[in-house]
Length: 439
Image (cartoon, rainbow, N blue to C red):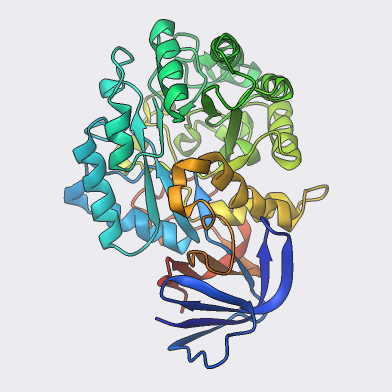
């Protein structure tokens, strides 16, 4: 199909492009930006005047509910939510049911996702079998099946010897290790430690639950040959939540350790006070922390210390959420809120602006993935002539109110219910296919 996106404001953070132009698409690729080639006859035109034409969003953490919920057709609904939110590439953590620790499961997930012709699913393989933290998975076979990195999701890896061997093995083959730093014992609470958790009688998760795990991980990296160069392991820190964690990240990057990081939309915008009167929609993992932590996370995302913003999309059904706060399943929907919440952060007083808001959703996460993207490395997260046509067209002036029942995801619980947010996706094009278009 030939598509012509007409007269939108084309913004590509990777190249610095920001201009009103046409974008011509044919055979799944961008053939021209600026003016369509001579004789180009589009079968579909998309009027984009007043809209922004940006690269398709890249989300580094989005749970899809499959494998495990095929009977509920969760993959279909969550992929629909991704397309509605402008997300064209997403990383699925390995804590599915069953766990993504076998090549056959990875291949099945990719095959089912590809049949939907919507977002590109990039599976993250389990670092250890069953996420039990005892025996390493067959990383070579999982990579051949399509895994872009290896991690433990929220499952603890208690044995530091196993972690050391995982880093050594992954470093040898150039694989990425993605870990959420949290001590298993100190992190067993349900809310961030502090006056609010104490007053509400909720078991607290102290900041040191994050920093102790970070110190351990970074010390293991420092002890490895080539740790400050290309030979060391590539480690990605998932969903940092504290100011102290940010300080350790900055120090590690200053030393030259091969480390990147992301933060969730929840931690970027909310604090522990948003729990309100035991609102289970705010039962999240990592837990919402204090204002100083939120400010440090926002500053690190703005100046590049934190590389990417993620939705941390976790669809949770009503039965698992309509429970007392401490018993409710952690998680919230996020795919359809990722872009608007990034725009809200970017346009806030003292915020970093539109270009940076788009950078942390496109170029930044694509760089985290890096070589794992293979032949797509030069295309994902950017608009480039000859590159794969992943495009998000959105109206930055649109304002809308988050109504959980109107979301496409089966997991409708969100702490942002009732928020008025900026930006509305008009059209999502994934690999040259119109995956979503708002009527």
